[in-house]
Image 1: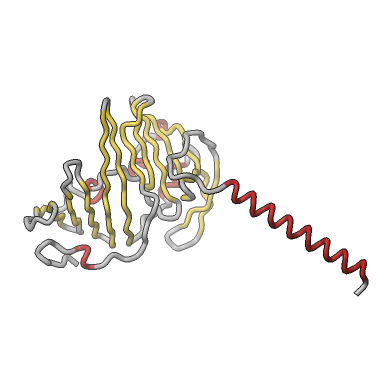
Image 2: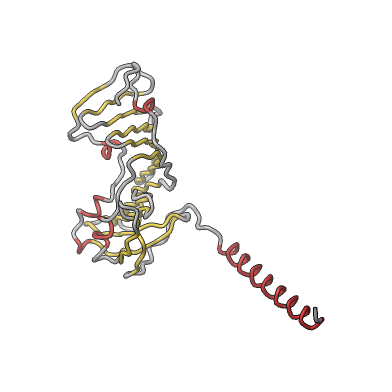
Length: 244
């Protein structure tokens, strides 16, 4: 091969290699977002792709006037597990607890560590809810009514966003928490500011805050979702009764 042609090919290879290395270095310098709630700066009118129940992608604009319509396109998974961390703050003190939950269709199990150290177990089905503490054999049973799976967590849900007056929503856009793409909505209701981050892929609320003035009084965080099917053993009462 001609020496000049060989030299030209060598230089092209070197230039391409340098460009690839520079791009890799730029990605490394940016790094992933930390596991903290993002700031409250907004960029209204953003658009993004949201998975629909049939697996297609819907391009949805998110702004204060359209965020409720965007949230309505989301659907929770039929089966999943996750752990939710809740913090509550008041003048001179705070508390926190964790809730492990497993969901399979109409069945939801929650294991909630109480501030006094006890663990409250609940299994909510289509008709009844079962509640017991620690490893006690006594189980309280009640028809599903005011006690629901959402009440047992207890955390906000994105249905709370749908119930807001549109005028109360002061910000909405797409944001990312620790690489989780979210729909963000912020509302003002009386003295309180409410903030919601809903995972676009999972359709679940992954973070929320409630502020009184400039002070945070409530915060929840659940960034990781395991969408494998729970086992029947997870929906078993202390006496061995399988509820499925």
